[in-house]
Picture 1 (tube, rainbow, N blue to C red):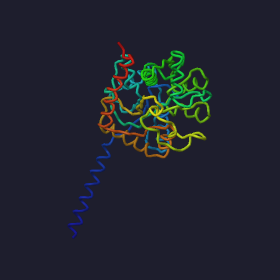
Picture 2: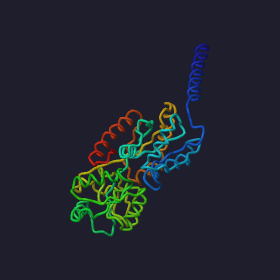
Picture 3: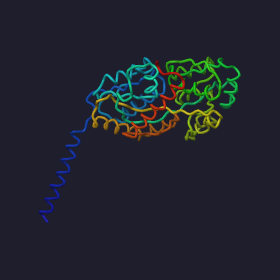
Picture 4: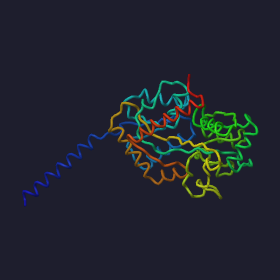
Length: 332
């Protein structure tokens, strides 16, 4: 019996030693982590990055600090090229939107998503067709029909040129025959302000970029560019929840588009370094604050990691090549 006990103790001790060795080899940041946003302040990517940063700080999920840095120059090329040049540096991460694909295609900038290391899809962001609440439109069809009566006179505000907002605008034109004057701005916050001020007739802003103005009774959502309705049923205004907004297809506008909100690292990092951020972001997603953010921003909460995430990104790149070619947005 004594021999058996001694053997069990040795086995247990060996297991502890292996676990300790494993923990000793696990990587974690040794200095401040720079969280790059390849877009302007106030937009959807910026807001998500700052929520992630805040949740990490609030819950002490990381020993080192994290600082959000906006590098939106050149439609996000500034941020992407910064990460590309930081090969092997695990102290930089970047939040991506669809400019991961559109910026290199539209500008010819020497960057491809394969220069980076996929870490985790945090969510997919919605787009909504918004109008000023003082206007009479109650459906996408009413608005589009009116726009078709005055081709080239209705103004659509959006973030950037040859990016998501303009791609959706071109798709609407292609499907309906309506013609818009597309006016680019630096970020979704600016876009919402333009619509509130009646300087444009419509936008296709992300929910989180216009929810405050909707709640205040300044803007009205006509439809969401998702094949399915947004699932959140809590009231946002006195009369409507996100789930009350019809899909654009329901409203006779057969256009859908969802945008990546994902995290990447620089190229050349190690599996241990990637896994650190995967685990960190899983902890973020498990918090009540994150779940509340998902609902308030009406996000599609799809989340992917590893090969499944990389494969999804590759498919989206192919889809965007098709969309950009159709819109004649690819750099010559």
